[in-house]
Amino acid sequence: MVGRRIGYLTYGLVAYLAFVGVVLYALGFVGGWLVPRSIDAGGPSSPASVALAIDLSLLALFAVQHSVMARRSFKRVWTRLVPEPLERSTYVLCASACLALLFAAWRPLPHVLWTVDQPVLRRALVALSLVGWGTALVSTFLIDHLHLFGVRQVSLGAAKGEPGPGRFRTPGLYRLVRHPLYLGFLVAFWAAPTMTVGHLVFSLAMLGYVLIGIRHEERDLVQQFGERYLEYRRRVRALIPLPRGRAGSSGRGESRTFGPSERSAEG
Image 1 (cartoon, helix red, strand yellow):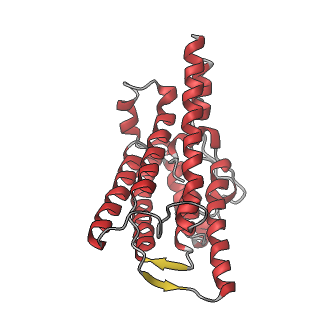
Image 2: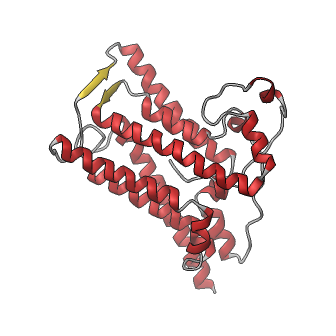
């Protein structure tokens, strides 16, 4: 049994570190900083039609894996094959593999659509992009960072413990928007001082994935939390931090959270 505990913990730690690595690389990939291959440079050159087909295929693979494996219906089947404490870590590891493949096989489409030449504005957009990355990171800690990335599950599994039921609270950023993690990533992707065809394809694909992913994710959340989540959805917008009139004024000061197992591990 000691071997199983060590195996669980090792597997969870490897999955977590793999995801940390690809997210750090993603910073450079999107921003073009300190990495050998980014959205706009470093990859093998291909005709535009071929590059577009490859890039869209890579984005589709990531979106399908990320969305399908996060669904509760898939988890019920998947945990017949994978021990339940390892389910989330396996999801994180697969997401990391899809992102790593995207970075490795991406074909640049470097034609510039628009650019901001004014130095102060360029720096402001770079800063805004970093704020987006920071927002995504902070939002994971506002719920349960270790649970979101599978570390808590493997720790409990190694100790023969059982995770408690998901709680419903909305701390900090979750009082402003229902999906601050997604919002942070979208800000990071779109706040680009130079927008190329490749960067636009990447950003549009991620926007589409987020909008579709929200619909599927919230369907699961409604099934789990029922009227509590529906009332929260009536009060708080999904991505735009603007109040919903009178409905937005109810429940001020409440602290609710969704079960972190229901949040995706993007980013």
